[in-house]
Figure 1 (tube, helix red, strand yellow):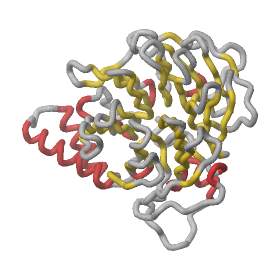
Figure 2: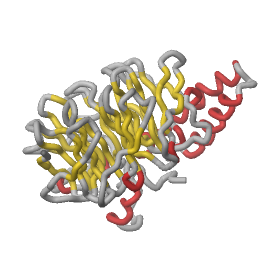
Figure 3: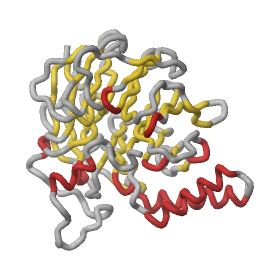
Figure 4: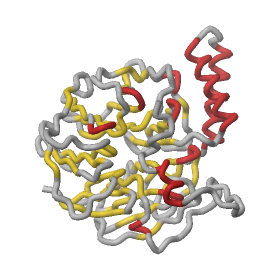
Length: 358
């Protein structure tokens, strides 16, 4: 299984680029601020988001967060209180943002991404899980699902803070979701003041990694390891399986109410035009792309896919067909977001770039 082979695609490569651990004094990355750098836009980045109002925010290795207030023309480094590798960003409003990453770190910004505060980490997340499932198991001692959740929570507590959060999404400023390795999923309904684990509400008995969470309207979708694909049943509050015809791992979701794309390993991608009920495989023609790392809605009918092979695949007909964009400087992409009418911001091992797509 792909337990820790992806972690937003670029995190496992950290040792390749930074070398083996040194004998220098250990600095706990959960309490050590990110270093200032003169190479902000060329540093490895793993996530990017359009926060609205011309504001773009990118995040990457060792706690680096970059903010642009002019659609990507200039960037400045944010003040970040941790030196953890960051994996995902979400901005329910242009000023209120969230970032997640390694060791279960969850950061919050209320000034558009310029300064951040730690709100949660793996130690606290593990304790939240243990507290909930101990209480529920006492109330329902014969519930097999709760027993399994409690065992996993206790295992996590002995390892904490080791598990990373891999993605975050907000439905509005109050309601949001965190997902991560070993099936971790948390929900807030009070704007991040508290977070509740929802393991018992997911149809994921093997604890597969959840790589991506996306919210489209009132629908919440998850994809992950070994074909895991779930949608929130709003009536029951349970995350139930979707019938995506693929048993490989999927890392990316994106779209709108009429066109939803799920994609992952070896360029496998699928389109749903009915809120995730039915799915059809997307055919890219000659030169099948490598693993799809990110999916972004660029316009009402324009969808962009970014791949690890450096392709930007563009659809202007709501996902029915795709073509390769002519780009200036391809790299191994980890994230993509809209930057302007015909521009996207992409991030990866070589940093941050703006590309024009047509």
